[in-house]
Length: 154
Image (cartoon, rainbow, N blue to C red; front, side):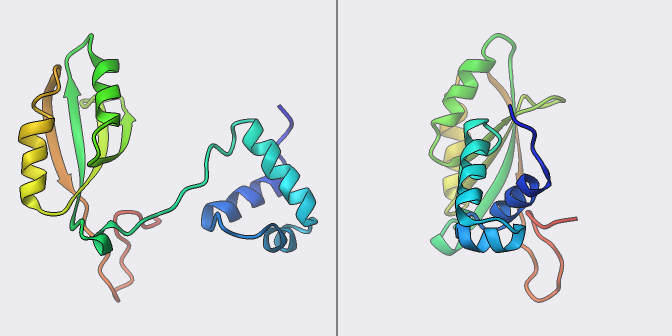
């Protein structure tokens, strides 16, 4: 693996802010040609440093008014199976394997409380090995107050 230098770090930072930035825009900010930026991005992807380019979606604007964090605890011996099953749940957008009291932290979205209730008492209860689920709701930022929300920076 090649050394990651300051320009690579700046490119990563710019892509993190807006992955749709053009090679020309990035090049201007890091003093490189578009071709050199493309080569660096390709190398960073080949080395697994940049894994993917994503889109942040405001799910509330699409009618998913409830976003929740689910702390899922499973019994030993079925962790991998439960993880693979959680990845297939359409309501879950992220699954993180964790240390501490919960086995997994899941981020999920639902149109309303009825959908959340059906998911918790239906889909999750049917997964063999799930012992406990704790639910926390993500609260959107307060518009106009300058307060950060669920994904705000500290």
